[in-house]
Image (cartoon, rainbow, N blue to C red; front, side):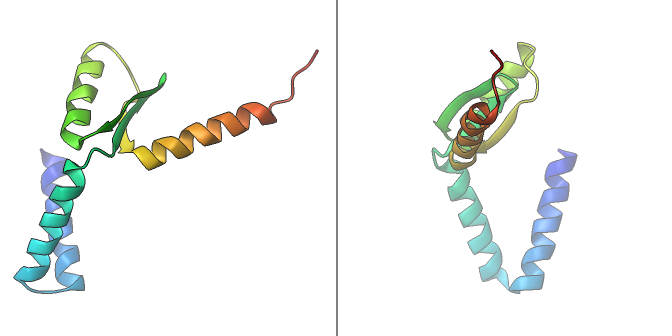
Length: 100
């Protein structure tokens, strides 16, 4: 809850610095809400991608459930970022020299 209050305060300060007025605030919150409602989020852990193509709320619930099961290094990221991680992992595996 403390982090959310900190985020909201900083977001409010950033908005005032860029574009003052109530229109800017309403635009910011509607854009932020719509981004969170899109099914564009992934959950990753130390084991890899746990889920993708979910809303932020679904991802948040999954993180809590997996944490209760003892999973570690849980993170919510966009599907695009998760895809880039997967591509980087496959590239690095090819670059590792194998000894025979």
